[in-house]
Length: 203
Image 1 (tube, rainbow, N blue to C red):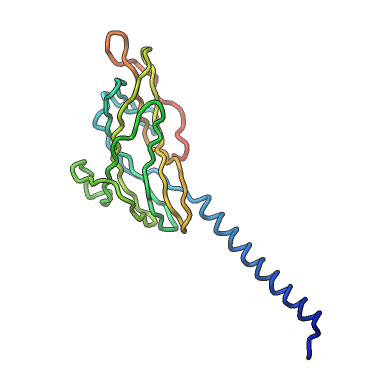
Image 2: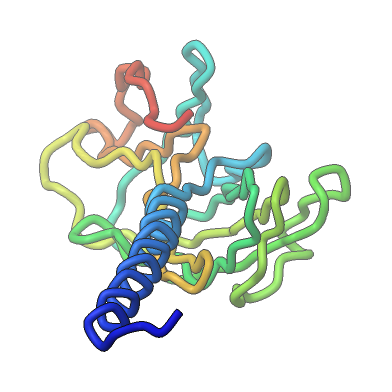
């Protein structure tokens, strides 16, 4: 059967439309997966600088005194629940006026293989396979603290930058516990702060 010129044009249009539809479906699937992909809090943590720890329900609040220039060190783990391998590229300094992120180290050993801070190495981009996690040690340097007593901030998530299927994403990854940093009373003693009783998103 010999196709006329008009039939050949219509056939080419149909092929082009079909190809465009397939590309649209693939693009939609790609964006759906990459934009919805999330990291989760891991199973480990380390809070050596807290003057007290208070647990309410499933959340422990690690309390610290706020003094200008002081450093606070702790560790929180970041997990990849799968099903894709992602590349954790950066732990983002998100402190604003309260603190600056002075140092980031990491320990990618298995959860049962120990988590000593002495084993931590300087942070580097790392591939997180499905069902794996990395313990990240953070050193915060406090900036100007409020002049009022019992004032400060609470930290319950950490912003990270990662890449999944070639797309760079940023996400606030929840921490299983809460870091509170409050100025002391007038006599220098810690405040009797109320226990953190709000749900942590994603936990």
